[in-house]
Amino acid sequence: MRSAWSVAKRELSSFFTTPVGYVIVGTYAAISGLGFAASFTEFCAITVNPAEKGYEGVPKLEELLISPYLLFCGQLLMFIGPLITMRLLAEERSRGTIELLLTYPLRDRDIVFGKYGAAMIIVLVLMSIVGVHLAVVGYYTDVEPAVLAFGLLTLFLMSGAFMSLGLFVSAWTRSPVTAGIVTFALWFISYIVGTFGQSLPAAPEIPAQLGVNAARAIAFFWGIFRQLVVELPLDRHAERMAQGIVQPQDIAYYVLFTAFFLFLTFRALESRQWRA
Amino acid sequence: MIEVTGLTKVYGAITAVHDLSFRVEKGEIIGFLGPNGAGKSTTMRILTGFTPPTSGVAKVAGFHIEDQPVEVKRRVGYMPENVPAYTEMLVGAFLRYAAEVKGIARGSVKSEVDRVIRRCGLTDMSNRIIRNLSKGYRQRLGLAQALIGNPPVLILDEPTSGLDPRQIVDIRQVIKELAPEHTVLLSTHILPEVAMVCERVIIINRGHIVAQDTMHNLTGGDTERIEVEATGVTETIVSKLRALEGVTGVETLGNGRYQVMAPRGADLRGAIVAALSSADCGLAGIQLKRRTLEEVFINAVSSDQEMAV
Image (tube, rainbow over all chains, first blue to last red; front, top):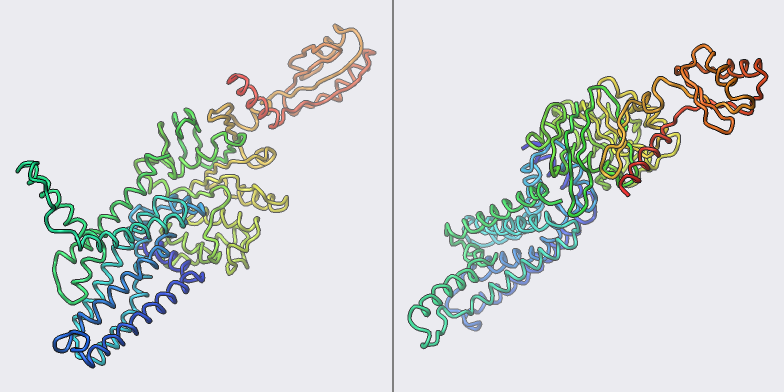
């Protein structure tokens, strides 16, 4: 693990000795800050006169402020995240330093966990900004601290899944720009599909002349398809979690997603054994 | 220390290395020669565990490169061609990173980094950004990171390419000093360099080994040839030359040219001149022929090319 930490440290030192790191953190701070200010103002406007905005009673802080704001922070990562992950392995290839990395006495796990660890530490830096905003909310309202902490955990799990996908893409190409664009495309498509999935009907219309068995089969596969479209997108599960609703399957989703793509990254590194 | 048997590497339709076999003993400095694209870098990349061979077996320091890659990598210092580096890092920080991932104990990282910095003449450079290093210093940095951890085997891919003459001399000196405790395999285009640094040479061309021997044997072994151009009766000249002490053979090359064979280092030129003048033969020219590595190299490479055509 010490080697993995060395790899992570080197990655971080490169990130924070070049302007890239500060630009990324600064951009995230600025946009998430604007988002927070906007959500907060909106929430205040609603609480002043809930009836006028169509709410019955005093609206819940979790639903109207914390959840949308956390989701916004997660979605912001959809744009910022590829800038973090695109360099991880692709840049080693484009600079030729992969030749050093793979001939030092490192195991694949040192490389994968080192790179992933570095990305997650950067995520933690970004989350500390979100943490400050949530601390402000916690200080001035009587919202339960556990809800805020769970909100941060949600964001962390969601970012972890984002990063694992980005690392995987970065392992397949020698061009960081390609890695960044592909990662962004995958995340964005997943986001659009998720939005589209919301409006899918629960059961498809099946023409009667197809017969009972065909109808059953279609309904079965439609069910799977709809479930995939609704459940797979990365931000879907975070919505419930960000409101402080703890469900094991949501947490399991992110943990498994991350594990799956880290596993694929291992395979990608190992592929040098059979690719030229 | 390095044992290669039947090593083959195929990239798609191109066979980069074909059925390579050689051995390198402990403490040897081996020169790896060959024209561009001969397969030198490919072989080195296989030996360092960067790319796997298509077939064949390679062992470094007794460990199989495919079965125990980490054990091999612990014992090999590798300086890749063109010295890739994290260009935004400081020289010292980069070397500390190399020491850490090579598993140097926490307490000894600093002293190990200082040691290679001194050895490679990088003193005063440790706070420089790698991007700003001159080619010569970058090359030294490449060597320095390979030396970290004092690995018994060093694989250096063109360590002196692109350096100025002064820097070449410095780097060669460093490599020469490595000899007794380290086994060194180095590739180069510069033939005199091999003559100066290496004890044994492997010449490869189009992925095949075309020559493999000690410098001594490749450049003529124990025999030394003197070419004589003389006027006079051929038989007289030949018998006079044969009669000289130390001469092991005389060949007539035609047009009044003769080749005299003698043990290496005998240098019979003086004696030949004296013998010919006492026999009233005119001497038109005399030359000690030492086979240079250039000739060996060109011969080996071009005869291989002809065979292939």
